[in-house]
Length: 233
Ligand SMILES: CC(C)(COP(=O)(O)OP(=O)(O)OC[C@H]1O[C@@H](n2cnc3c(N)ncnc32)[C@H](O)[C@@H]1OP(=O)(O)O)[C@@H](O)C(=O)NCCC(=O)NCCS
Image (cartoon, rainbow, N blue to C red; front, side, top):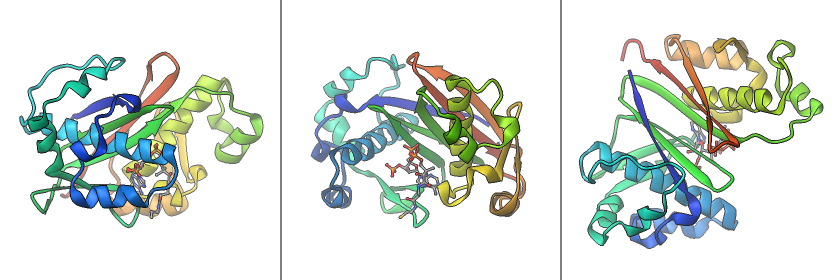
């Protein structure tokens, strides 16, 4: 069980019409806010590049995560390949990959934060969710609202940001987003427990053993991947 990730700086994206499918371009027109447009585009670009590399459509090379400017140098041929990988939104908000009109079974996840977009992919037998958040001032009232008492730990901004990314990665792994309450996901020493609707979602997935991997990124972010082997698929 493994996963791969692709980080992209949103300011480094090529023009939207160079890598989006006609359907995606039409959806982009419906988005109003510039920030939302950039985030949405960044997530699509990161995931398309990642999948194209996985499928050997693009040459594999390791990207220095802090410098993605050279993605702008992708050839027209390479960018045209990306148009054939389409990412649609399921009713839940979760991304679904379509290649050649067929739904791709791999697990994917997208996150964006403060100018960065990230995509991750794992095989069809893995549940996956990712979240990137900047380490920012987190108020006591904020922590009170979203966390359980035992999760607050040292209550530093870094700790609270880490716990927040873990909860968001887990709600994405469950395919539910914040239709679930963050208080229905209980974290302790990187272990996850569930109550309420989150427990129902976890039971429906046959109780996968979730692994959390949280790292610092670009010095001021926390990036978390939640992943688990699917049982009975
Ligand atoms: C999912 C959610 C936890 C995202 O957290 P966030 O910190 O605001 O945003 P992030 O940048 O980390 O992640 C956003 C990405 O999460 C993914 N996502 C959204 N809903 C998801 C779900 N139910 N399951 C898994 N992933 C989901 C999407 O890919 C989205 O990016 P995109 O819209 O550009 O494709 C939260 O915003 C949420 O629950 N939103 C409501 C979901 C929604 O929109 N539902 C109605 C759909 S019409």
